[in-house]
Image (cartoon, rainbow, N blue to C red; front, side):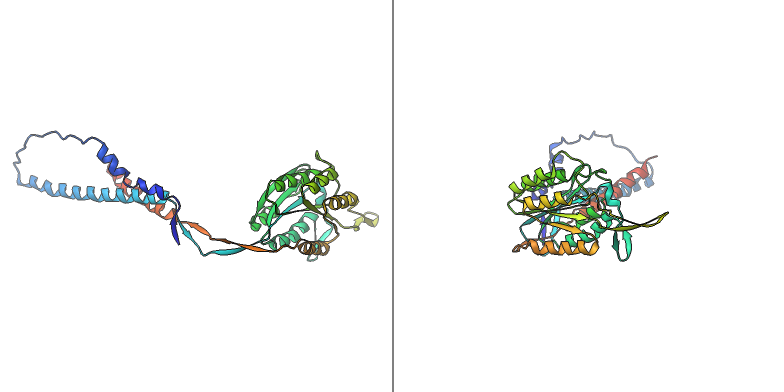
Length: 328
């Protein structure tokens, strides 16, 4: 269906005529009669007639260009067919750790060794794609916590911004408490939907102004349920000058605090030692937060103002070029 977003703009259509009537008429001085001694001089009348016809054509083109400009300014649109969108009534915020420890390559994807952030991106991407009907948000935190995406139904944008995130973008340390506090701030201002925060980290709280337990208590009072995910393998074999050595790359992971955060807020703590466990956690999150779904209709809108505006610019160029060509 075709519609005009700003129909009142069309009232500007007679503006050139009103300006023409309002301006005073140009006075023409009487000229003395001239005698034409040569018969060839009478042929000037044909040239003047051509000029009159050219002038009238230009006037019509000016009028057409003006009408196209007014029509473009009224914002013509094409409304597509109505699309049903499932609505779950759930607000879900993802908080992803970008601290320096996320560089540790103790995960595997298709047999290739990758760091923790790369594994998180791949698995979380699949989780985001399944969140149809949820309003999603994205928080990236390191030394500081930043709201990368406010709550939105546009899961593609959330996924794209997650894929564009990089280690160290928010600092090298870990501010878990600030990330929870930022989620509380952004979710508390919204409606009374079910509020969920999924926090992924591989370390302990080493930065920020709010302690994780204090933030978890505040989240419980505000009705925010926090699911925490501890990322990192328990054992990694490294090659050294003295042979192979077993190390624990997750020695800095503060599981005690993450469990306390989840317990205080009514959520759960999960341990992701590899990509398969991380994928299972996201599958389990789908089951832990089931909600009855409703539908909301949406009609896609396509702007059409570009076409009349482009034609008006083409006419303007066609009208200006002859004037520039005549100049000496």
